[in-house]
Length: 389
Image (cartoon, rainbow, N blue to C red; front, side):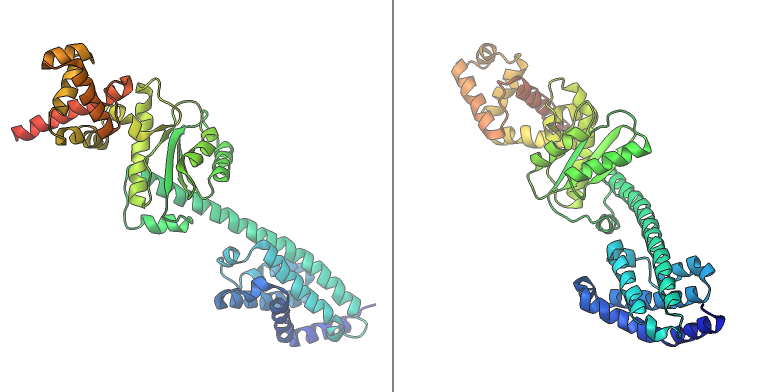
């Protein structure tokens, strides 16, 4: 039977040996775990503080087992919360296992004669409480970090949706693990209204398809900003199943955050304008919706449409601009356009072919003719207004 004197003597020996036990625990960690040896000096010092606090906590537990649960938390207060980012729960369990083994291996040395079994039993009970405490600490840290990351992600996505790239945005994106590089922006709708659980599951599904993606869910609008070194169309294809029915719009390729913001705005406006093109493919590029985006008041789309579909034809000189304008004004009739211009129909056809080679749009195609018709209307209005000024 263990007497009060035997317990008191064991406690005295433990208190006198805490320094040696902590040193032995660190040496054991250094010898057994490569991850510990590779830690920076600051993180190693944090682990040292945890080990020392763990030994002290066990001594306090041995002195008063009823206060043990409170004492187990004291060991984790010896290190800052950042420790949970540097060291995983698995590594923390290794730390606990190591210093428990150290105390157990020295139990005969520190226990008073006849109190060896009591000391070993106390070690086993304490290690169980420590394991539960470690799991709870990491769970709380993960919950807190998850909530913070969700708020930060919402701020970053909202800024990109608004097209506002201030000095703070790069650091906020970096805090989420974002790295500058090829980026794909995909915008569409969710499959109906989502609750909190459904939203969380959708985010996990998207990040399985595109690790590190930024996700914005605004009502039933879904914005995915995916950083990927693989082909953009492959990333888009992997994300399609995450969207509900309706158009899915892909923004122009982007690399920098400024470009990502422009791409996001283009995709958002494209998603709003896509219903105007009944035969739009899924997914559809935002730049393939330039005429429809003009209809919803997208000034950037109007400027781009003029730049890519009107200015090159106007700058080419000759009779290309006149031929396209006449062909469109004549209801896309080769015969009527040729009579109006007093040239052969083959001449009109040849000039239109040159336009297709120059711009990539074939005016003989119904869709391409619509694009050029809108571009010419905008271009002529711009030229008229500039002359008036």
